[in-house]
Image (tube, rainbow, N blue to C red; front, top):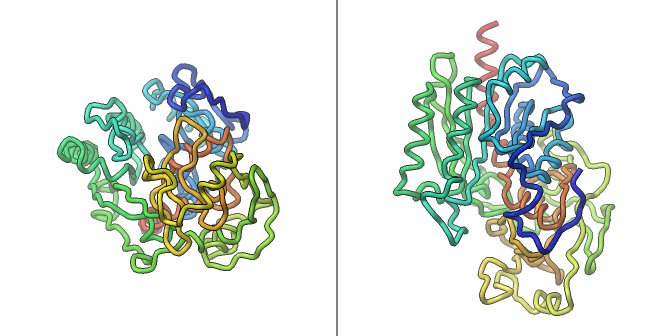
Length: 398
């Protein structure tokens, strides 16, 4: 397990926790599959946004792959019955993974998801480059699709992919999916429209395998919160107030909003488990200068003129897009009512990870995980119709 220590001398991009050589498996001896659940493989899984959202829709992750050890520790801990694979996906052979899953009794994979690394596409990346090698990781994703031939495939990336290389990447990905027998639909979704308290646009590709009695094409759902976005206040106001460098592991306020009830496992998605205790709610250790800077900044305004994305959040609005964080112990957002940066639990709430989900790593590593993740609540809304379609087909075949 990764220790909760951050080395200020090592940039995240050069972290010793990035696995490039040896492939390490997690939970091999604990693997257990609920045969009543649909199966999924989670590629480029990160902390597990896809796996969480899909689990609410009725899928069960049987395998996740990522090369960032803290994220894999988080994913594997929260999915103890699934196999975690830590390693460079370009060195992992789909055929071997298929044999491994077959040895565990998994002969059918219904869904393959992927949050392909987006740094090359991201508009937040000042070194945006059409030829960034990370832009081509979708080809590794397609190798797994070709080997497993699932009923559905879902690929997610930042909105910037749509404009990269004049839109050619979007066309190429759709073309690859179509060439493997998938009718593909693409749409740009705002997570806030689906109940996530954050403005976060994501380009989503959904492919349906042809000639299997499934839907002719996937139709994206319409967000029910499009005209009534959830706010930061609705998301985090029930969490305990903290002093500088303070941790509290118990709730001291009841959930007031429907969203807070959902995050605590008392909402409409009944598969969300109530937490045994409050985790990851530790305030940053700020110098007095930083505390004063946050306290004097008007909500909605930048705390530092040179860093426009580092703002103090407004209570009565959704959060702007949460980023992965930086190479220093910096924080992106200031708390709207307290003179400090956000805790990891508050960042997780803004991303729609439930309170029962535990994050591992140093503070910067955990910020990377929460910032890179796809919001589970968005994925739930995208994959629920997929699960319903597969179940419909299964009933017809009985």
